[in-house]
Image 1 (tube, rainbow, N blue to C red):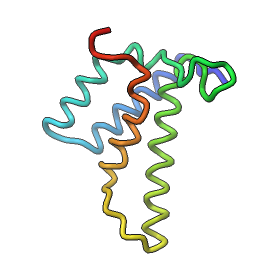
Image 2: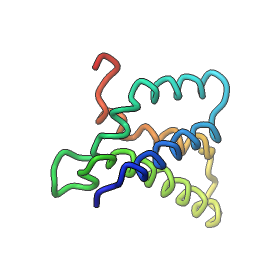
Image 3: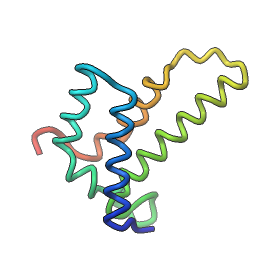
Length: 110
């Protein structure tokens, strides 16, 4: 699978939209600053450098991260429907899912 530039841009906009929806104040501002710093890498990075692994294509990290966020939110809702005492808020779930592979983008010194 290869994403076209328009799809990659739409995915990045969707990530920013999720940040805007779920976070506010200083936390929101800091997350936006982080993604401003990593924007080019977040847009271009594959989820894996190995061709036989998941999302090894331009925009793969972003596509994968969005899918993890969406799946995590669905799982949270499913647990609630099952009667599980879920203590993690949507915000908690989005934050954990959004950053689960952040290290693949490098560090702040790059």
